Image (cartoon, rainbow, N blue to C red; front, side, top):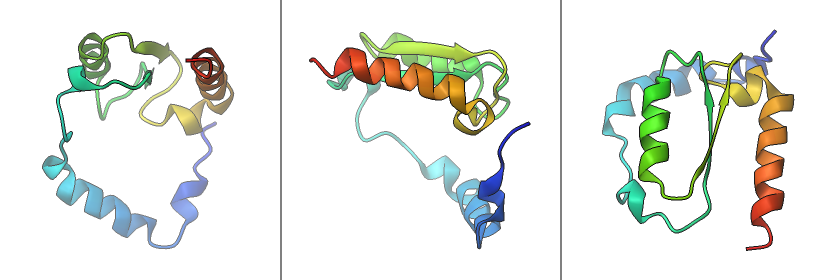
Length: 99
């Protein structure tokens, strides 16, 4: 069962409305292929908000980026599968802390 404590925060519904209203105005400040920082993408295979193919495209554009897919997660793998998400992230941080 997903941990949805975030929905119990004051004004979370207003924040969601703002994201929905302004989401199309979001953009990256530079093309992905210019990123010079080690990057870990973690994607939920069941994400119906931002489909897996978008993550795969970003992975192709981010040279050297690590890409992990969590089969049993949707758009919020950090909340839906926190143990698996944290394991992936910690391994990435340990591997890249020496660079």
